[in-house]
Image 1: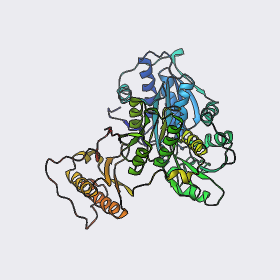
Image 2: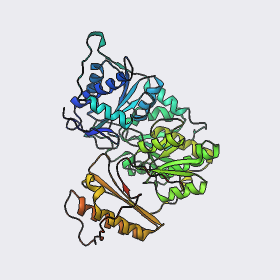
Image 3: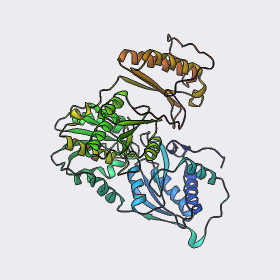
Length: 481
């Protein structure tokens, strides 16, 4: 096997059976067990879960074969949310966890991410060691040393009980529409919300292997908004394919994103005295409106690069209990070791019950700045040294001053450069975003020349891009408001 980097910002991901092959899945299963054996675990136990993609069983079988070939034991949890695997690793005293999912990506994609025995994702160093073990010589066990694969039949039920235990209010009488994205949430949503006493209707809950995330779920809020529009619902909840993120709509079908959810949860934790350190961890994509809302509440913020792993690193370092992303990844560290859409939903419903407000009323905590985000197909590897792009960023920031901001970043998983602009006025937001998108297309684009008629900014040799805008992979930006 040629030596190369397999792990991205969220595990190994690619087109199933092309980039992410059964051979690679087998090798990863073997390597991650060897990592545990190196650390003194005699018979590593690995909890394995997956979402509903057609390629999931194929990759699960291959991964389990790799685990067994290195002497490990696979505990198969079946279709189950990513955060459920992270929780079950600790609940069952297992040594590792593995999730076969590509989250919100289309169904031909798939991925494998790993958790350690503490329920947290493997560190960068651990992932690098797994990559090294893919090519290092190995003397496989034989006879009794060969591992086995077992079914974990009650994992979903135990996970549901864990989530339900965080709710301290009677939620009966609440009617909610729930979009499961034809994904992993279908395995637990009905059981959880029934246990909470919430009257609910499920949509996007008929997975067939190829419909995961298709015009539904958290990437297509219009699906749940359409159901809520039929009337009688207090709100709508929408999960992504592996149910580690949550977005919502209010009773009128208006979107409520991760920024709103974080503000609502922060207020609730602050009221109960449980917001450790008075700090919330955000990413650079959080709307300025959220940052100003938290400031009004007296909350400090720490801002990191995009990615839940960076949010979690900052939370653990600073002792924070709440952090997340605008996309709906919310980490409630008192209850979970990773983003958890079902847990976020339960905490949100409890927070609304505590406040006596509707979701629409609570969402007014955050007054959003106009924001535009465009993903440009581009050679992300050249972004750091693209002087014309950073010159455009400097000109845009000079115009915005303190009433807006620009974030340019390379996607961690796709050939994309994300361009985000916030401004006090929509016109300025749209115009400046257009200039930046055109410049990225001109300098780095994969789909042809830039848009015609857009002025390129001047470039001065030696100029440096602003810290907030120039975000390399893994860089963290810390700021307290």
